[in-house]
Image 1: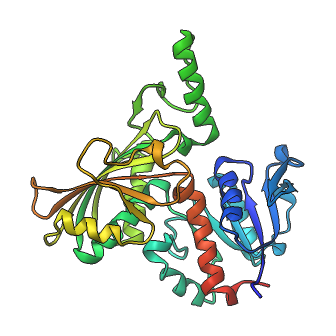
Image 2: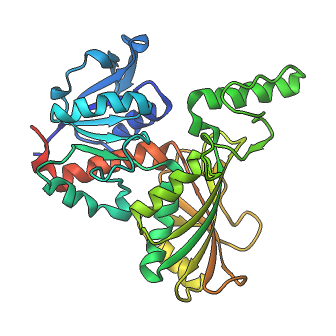
Length: 347
């Protein structure tokens, strides 16, 4: 008989929390009790799960000793406060925020890339009980890079991202929707979530600017990729917010230490877990965000050699940022835990 687990979703009423609820049902995760947690403002709200209504509870008053696994996506400050409390109560926390990602004693996991890191984590008697989910743009990039890096070591990556407004949450999506309406209605465009008009525009600014000139989003991609894949990889990132609702796109240029032809890269990626290659050198022979919204895989197109450098390759990579970029990756980590490390779950 398959064990069932008590699952707590923190930030259950947000965009990522809503996706997590759907994915748990779609993938038939063995849930016994589902606890939906949010701020006191959302207390009492009803959300459907497996044709039953689950009432949202106040996070502040929840007893985490009742939960085996906690899926957190409430924002960094709230995770910083409640994730350690949950972990101390015996709940294994999978956190979607950036707060814990670069801490040495907390693994940063993409199951297709570095699932082996969980083995050392669970063998550590002093483990934190907190596992981090990487940044959405990092996840899709390392899924594409890992099988190529296994074949020819990657020396350098230059990536430009074209990121959907859903990466900024519901407020970001609302702002794009409202501004687009107001453009056609010839009304004032209000800027609240973004620093410039987002409708019909592209903004090279995601997160605060740092002293080195990078934005926080760009630095996350650099630091997280090194932690997940290889500290020796040199990375340059430019992150751009675009007028797309769902689906991050990335133009990735890779420099290897030895030759890797586009044809071989195509074959490697086509046979890799979690990747779908759609790469025909003709009209419509590539993937855009519109086609992949709601899909689980990382999609790769435009695979070609870069003759401007030795051992260069260029890719176009697209993925649903709410699913593989956040909610799905978290659920996949939970699936990995119950399949390989269930003996460490407090039952």
